[in-house]
Amino acid sequence: MKSTTTYLKALLGASALTAFTALSAHAGGTSAGTNVQNTFTLNYDVNDTPQPVINNVGNETEFTVDRKIDLSVDSTVDTSVTPGENQRILTYTLTNEGNDAQQYDFNIVDEAVNAPLVGFDASPYVVWYEDPLNAGVYIEFTGSNYPELTADQSITVQIRADIPTSANDDEREILSLVATTLDTSGNVVTEDTDGNAILGAAENVFADDPASAEASTGDSGTVSDGNESATAFYVVSTAELTAVKAVDVFSQDGAGCATIPGTPTSGYAIPGACVEYVITAENTGSEDATDIVISDTLATDLTFIAVTSSGFTGGTFSSEPAANHDCATIGTPCDIVFDTATLASGTPSTPTVGTITIRALVK
Image 1: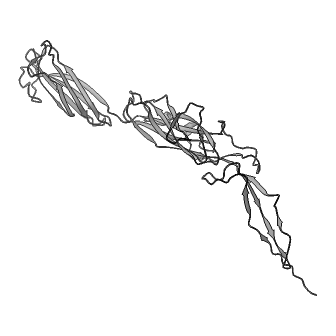
Image 2: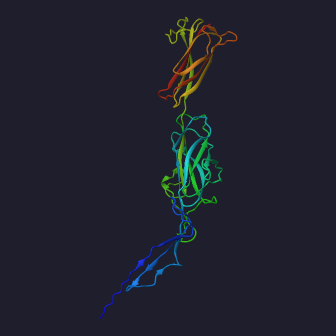
Image 3: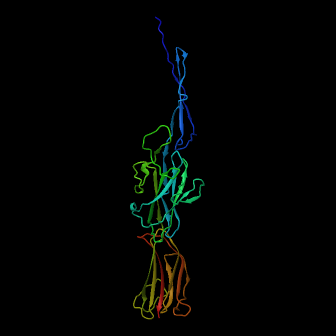
């Protein structure tokens, strides 16, 4: 009996991938809403005789690319400020890492509760964002004029604030910028919860990094939710000056009054005695104190003898009476002005000290 062997040679043809909307290549992936169609062909022979082709032309396999909701917020960490400065800026970067255009809402969270060095309040704060259509141009955020970013687009976002004059050296104001994803109509996006429909309208899928959230922003940091935040802070860098004036008797008989420092002999402030005034300034801050001006006018009961300075950088006596000038002289009081001086930065434990020493005789 003749045996007949049947050979099935099956060849699965190359799949044809087509879409009715353009396939865009970006970090977020194929654009949301893209309809992806796929066809196949199967060719085979029986006893070396080609058989009818099997395919799904006219009944293509298809699906819709869903909407990936993903974003990132980064910051430059800190900005050094001086008390009294206006409109100082904290800088953040917002990036749409999803696959569709999205709008974004902004909120600011004061992280004072988590920051032991916080010591000043720079509110009210104002958010400005870079115009997505005009790089380098900034728009004040009013609470409803949401920026719209295309997939992969990044913009700079700023928090601007005035620094109070009461802020002290090394104090911080720590602020988190929270960005919330909206749709292109300005509505908060919600994630699909009714199961995946493989075909039809694109469904929202949260894909942002939950681990990057700040606990106090309302973002739990445990789930993806379309919110991201970053923290930056103002840190005060300034001079911290204190100044006092003291007086003592240098010599009861007036001896050595013109020689500073000299050797004091003390005694009583009787007529003819030499008294010494010392103005002491200390800088315990992290910045130099510049353009210092110290003014002093001696009482009319005195005769000016001498004045000198120490511990300052630069500085001149732009006003100084002549030696032995009677401070009661009409029209020429004993005005002393020391100006254009600098007192270098210091620390609370090692302050930089500058002094002005004035000698006068009691009339």
